[in-house]
Image (tube, rainbow, N blue to C red; front, side, top):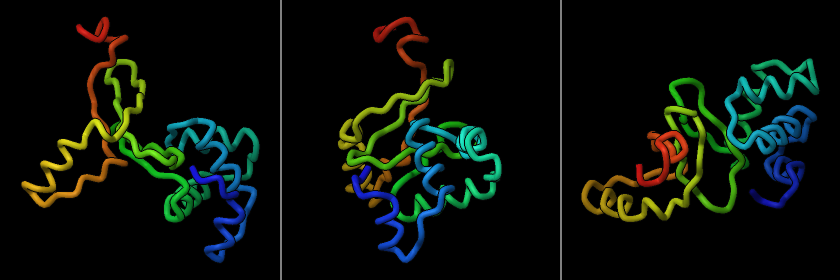
Length: 142
């Protein structure tokens, strides 16, 4: 994520920093990958007056200004995480529901082929691959 303080990013876009915005961003950072409900549960422990609608609106705003992004890592709500310098692909274990990140370069060959053969530009930031992690399958060669 950028080192620019949230207040500076918001001010540059004509918005103001609120305690709720700061708290939601810090919570997403702390939780690493979290649904709006998970963010709300943690935020509510600190600031009981913040409702789920505020969390959703704040996540939408933070995504619009490029500080967080989301991916669909399950059948439920999107999962948000802080935008960092490197895009990554999510590996989601169907058994333990663990999430691993791998460099987006692992999909470079596929992305190049999709673009050249289909004219399709892959949005790697939203890619989630589902399977079974090595711990659940009994090791990397299982």
